[in-house]
Length: 182
Length: 278
Image (cartoon, one colour):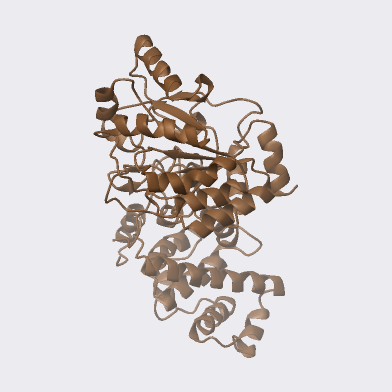
């Protein structure tokens, strides 16, 4: 499926091996970036910090990642982060909504979804009113963090879609178990 | 500490090699059975542009590399190689690895300026027996090499003879040494190295397995990126091996140099690699 070769650990530059799991398949993002080790070694720590545990709770972050990925039409990121969102506490109904017509999830998260939609809609700044609405629930540094998260998500959406990276087997299995179309 | 300062310290400590290698190209007029890069006529050329080689040499001087090496493929199938070699040798002492089978009188005349520069030509010769040598390297290779070496020596261009493989018995090796001495190459300019089990050698079930820890780190630039050692950017089944790729970025040279230094930092000071493959 992928438009580029995804390197396995034994083919990859030896300096990139720490980014491969001891067992099982590596993320296709790692497999692709291993072709350019100097990018892998800066991109993966960046991704780990931006997408991983931070001052903003994981549920909030996964709402941003899944909504942006759905709006920008990245199959790989939608599938992978649907599962990640479940692990962060979202329900199957909530993730379905984030990929289509969102459910009402409370004012804070509704404001967040509206902000994500504006982020994806146009190259202009997010309207002041939507930013102000979100700021009623988030501090300024949290807004900065989520803006970077949304931007990094958009970057990876384009990366994964352009290269047609394949979704992992375990992710597809969980989607099937929950009856979510792959 | 700058990359240059770190490099100079690492060279002094024996942590990395002091030579910057340049793969000028991957194609070759021969098809040796143990070739690491599956070089032959008609393969992908993967040329490193002449101006980039010279730019890399300039940066190598600034960073603290002490010497340069050009290899391939056969460097002298690249039309401008005599002049490029001269430009490189005006910057740092240079060794060029060649099969010495293309040294026509016309090409030798173009090599003449190298006699006044710090240039050594390393020429492969695997046996004193022409048949054994030519079976490993290519038909008529032996005759061309024993013709070329004295001409180069006479021109004042230092020659080193490289023997690849462990096929020579003690008696055969003595005959080979007698031969290179007769050709004008002293014992200290004869190196014997193992076949490394990569590239065509691997396809032919030859040689010793070499991982990063077995290869002394010597920054090596190719058209495909920067590698751990000149034994690293190998080709098998037409596919470039990436296991010893350091970075895709070649220039500025500081970038791949920094990457090599980071990767080699795990080598204890002063220790050499287990196979001593040079």
